[in-house]
Image (tube, rainbow, N blue to C red; front, side):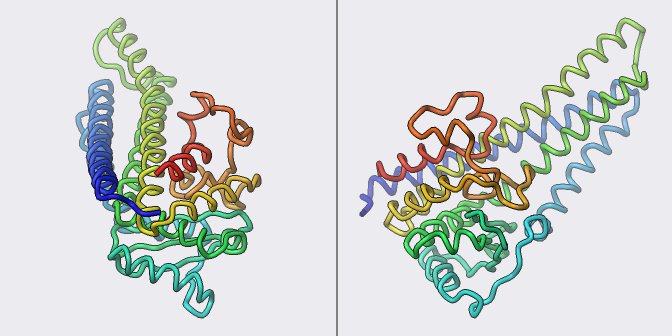
Length: 310
């Protein structure tokens, strides 16, 4: 399948738009972290809390920037693979990386029968692609090329850094919220009179409950949007969207979760490592709204439809 110039221009326009929206959301996250830090410092009458919150959030972002790939690879049990370990996989990654104009990423293999893959690293010069043994056995060469092209698109689109930042900020907001709720339960802090203190506690508890939920929803929304973008970019790279569409169908048909499925890294994979939802397994029925917004990935059926309609 060939792509027209208009189609390519539309894809690149949409890619730029999504990247701008994502960085806007990252800015919102930082504002929320600083806002929570300010509220806690006011409530506990301790300005140093704000400084600690800002310092810790910056420190965690720097730490995750430099070591996110090593952390993720260790969490998933990925092991480095050389050319002799799997020549066909190595050649596919190498050829597609050259086509995409990207440096050759490091290749890792996860010993897991569930078919899945992900990309990680802070930038294109320090990137890694990991695939499971299950996906190597399940897919043919054309389908595997589609999957690798999808992961290389994440690298080219700079998805990995943004995803890491979002994870860190969501976790930090949750930690701040948990600290405030626990402190309020034990009656610590409270600035001002009794009535004012009670109102502040109520506002603080509401914010502490809603902030992590809102942060998580934004994280999931970014993940789903970027999966669609990587699908489109990957199909443009291989010029054969049917390959990735077929791979997604096979991956979606595998009902069991990965051996080391983890909610912290779930959004990095090409498909939900916990397996498709019960609603998605139903096939043609539309996935309910509440299931959709709390899912790390868009439904396989929608991704396949989008690929085959190009």
